[in-house]
Length: 537
Image (tube, rainbow, N blue to C red; front, side):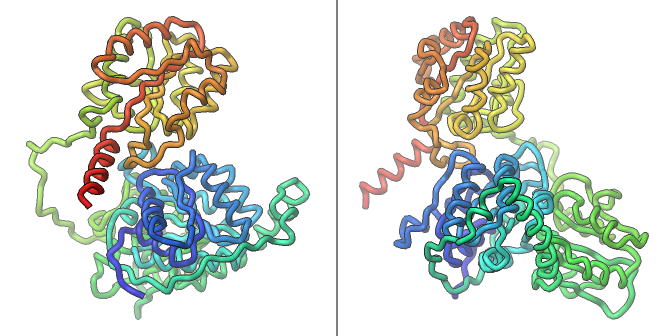
C-alpha cells in the first residue's frame, strides 16, 4: 500500500490494475482517454500480459471486453458519455445476460460540454439497463469503488457502470492504493448457452432474473459505505441530497460539520429507506447532482409526501452545465464573492487547427471550389477537422455525431442538394463511417466523400487509428469504383491537384472518395522527439 498523486482517470486505471485486470478495450474520448492510456503505459513494463488496446468504436470495445469476461477474466471498457450511445445495443443486452468475470464499464460524462456535442447524464443508462451504478465523490473513492466493484460484479453476476464527470476525471488528489491481486484464471461457465444466447426463450428468463436482482442491488445501496446519512440533533428546515462530486462541493461550504441533515449518494439504485429517513428530518430537500435532475425527479415519486424538493427543476440550480462550489454555495443561501473580475479586454481564444495541419490544406482547397457552387453543402464529422467550422475557414455546415457526415450528405443529395459533400477523418471513418459509405454505394448516391487522413486519432491526443494504411482497401471492398477513389498529399505543392480532384468528383454523378493523407503534425513531432531521445540514450 502506498499513496500516489493521481488524476481521477489514473486512480480508476490503477485500481483496475490492482484488482487483477486482464484486459481493457476502449475508444478514445475526452474525458475518459487517460484511463486506457495509463494502463497501456503500465502494460509496456509489466510481464503479466494484460491486454490494453484501442478498438474501432465503443460497441466493439464493450463486446470484446464482454468476450474476455465470458472467459472468466476481469475486464474494463472506457468511453466518454456519447460513446455509450454507440455501445448501447451491447450494453443493454449484457445487462440482460449477466457476466462471468468481473466487468466494469466507465462512462465519463461532460456537463458544460467542454469537449462534447451534448451533456447527457449516463446515470440514465444505468437505470435503463437496471444495473448498479457507482458515482465517486473524490479520487480515493473512485479508486476504492473500482477495486471493490470487480468483487461485486462477480458476486452479483452483472456488469457495473462507473459514472464520472470531467472534473473528477481531470483533477488530482492523493490516493492510497491496496494490495495487488493476481489475474483470474480462465474459467468457463457450465450454463453458458442458456445464459448468453438471448433467444426469446432464454431472454425471458434472464429478464426475470434481472428484475429479481433489483432487490439485491437495492439492499446493497442501502448498506453501502458510499451512501451515508449525516444527521444533526434537531429538526431542520432543509435537508440536502448530494450525489457524486457534488458532495465534494457541499463539503467546501461546510469545512467543519454540516448544520443540516445530508444524504451522500454515490451508489445506485437509490437508497429509498435512507431518503425517507432524510425526509423525516427536514421540511424541504435540496438535491445537488452534476448532470440531469435524475434523483430530483425520482425523489418526488419515492417520497410522495408533498415535501418541497429544490434543485435543477425549480431553478434553485441552473438547469444546464456543471456544478461548482460557488453554485452550490449560492443554492444554500451563502454569500458568494468573486474577488477576480475578468477584464473586458480579455477575449476568449477559440481552438484552432494547428499550423501545418493537413486539414488546413484540405479546407482551403475545398473552400475555393465550393465557391463555384452556390447551393453546395459540406457535412462534417467529429474530430480535429470539426474546427473547420470556425474562422478562418468556416468551411462546414454540420457536425452531429460520429459518422453522420456521410449519411447526412446522402440524405441531402436524395433531397436534391448539389453538391453534397462529406468530410470525415480516418478514425471516425472506421468508427462509424463505413456503413454509411456502403449505403451510398448501394444506392449510387451522388455524393463526394473526403476522408481527411492524418493517420491518428488526433482530437484526443494521437492514439492509434484503426484506419491507418487501410482506407483505400476498405473503400474498394465496400464497392467504390477505383477510378473515383483518389489519394493525394495535402501540401501547397499539390494544392491545384487537390482542387481539380474535388471539382472533377463533384461533377461525377455517383459515389466518389478523395483521401488527402498526411501525418498529424503533433504525432510526427512526438515521434521525432522520441527518436532523438533514444539516440541520446
